[in-house]
Length: 564
Ligand SMILES: [Zn+2]
Image (cartoon, rainbow, N blue to C red; front, top):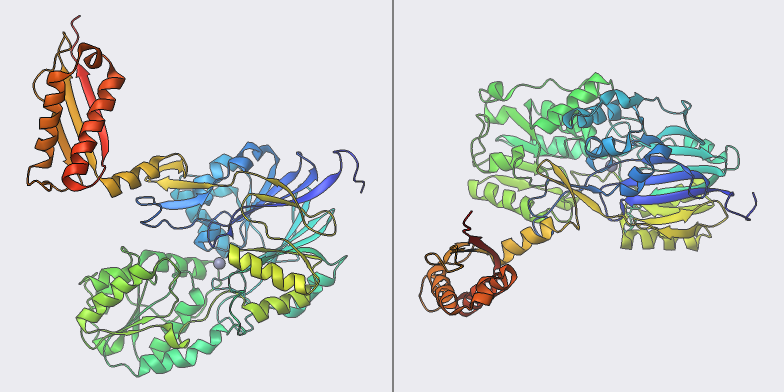
């Protein structure tokens, strides 16, 4: 390969989401001459909005504008596993990318629901088996390398290019007995590292880089969960991530062993279990009963497994915390178990649910002692073991906030692996011996707001936040054919106190000031829309500041009656 001219083929990596944050994963790889690289996209996920920064927004996803402009060069979209932060945006963004989608059977089943829900053609999804099955996508040869995680059929992606082999780990943990799905097979991973010239670059999960203990296996949960559930007299309700099919099985089996009938509550959970059974990744799940039948079972013989481990308002756990749900109700003496961890940012929702149960006299058990939940991500010693096993020439950390990426780079560099922090929008050239930053592109966020996709910087949400924080005033003035005020100014307030400091009605106080202004305004001002707008806004704000100490958002409407 020569370095001269722009005809040199290069191998590039460009995260559009998931690097510098945990969520909305989207990673682009490209190979070819600069500016003409053939491209693939690995994962296309969502992240969830919050009241502080994105109130009213339904979903957050990566801004794929860069890729959409180059959609004619996009050979494939590959989904590593079926978590929302890896597949959740597929239906919403596919129409801008229009490339074939590749996934393993269970992941493909979930991806198909994403496409159908968004009215997109699910036929573009192609089901692929694990390695040695190969997908040829332009200059890339792709293979799914099974790995354990917290959802069935997770896979790392082997990306073979003319410039060498890249291993995109996806999300993973080193679990030798994951209960459902494939175990981590170190010898197979080692084989992958020894083939050809080995691993040129490993793009690696960084989520748990700060966890100092080796990760624990899903199988270690069976005994403590069985002992806990057997020790309880009332109804036991457990929650976990709907997609953690292995955990659902562990929980259900523990309940069954304690002589309890099992009932699953929550649409997302039933959807996951159905997909897992239909694609054959889940076998011998304990028999489940419907909510109607569950209502007839005595409390000591019943266990519910419910959605809503993150305190989501509409999920089953929150519904039950507010009272009767589908004929079922929590009572004093029952137990609620969080077999999950609270994702940072979701604490308030979870605590709200916990307090509601506390008021009912329900005992709450969470993962404080580390007995009832294990993480789906590799901890620091596991990451180091994988570095050792795979011996990549370069390591690029992904799936982490900036501090995670930095720490992961530090660990790799200490071992002599060339490593680089590449946050969203940072394009790396991986062709040489060390990663090289070659370009920064705009990589923002796209919001699903109701049914419309908007840019995070379009100003819509900024305006919404301003209205929420400051309240809103509508001031209307009508001018007749001679540009003289017709009647009084009319003010309506929203989200503001009715009475101010003086005890006067706030809207009336504004109307009075506006009345005075209209009486004294010159024809020059009355005839000029901009001047009217400015003056009315200023007066409304001035009254608001005096009366309530706030500067509200103001909408001014000046209607002019014209003669034909
Ligand atoms: Zn995941």
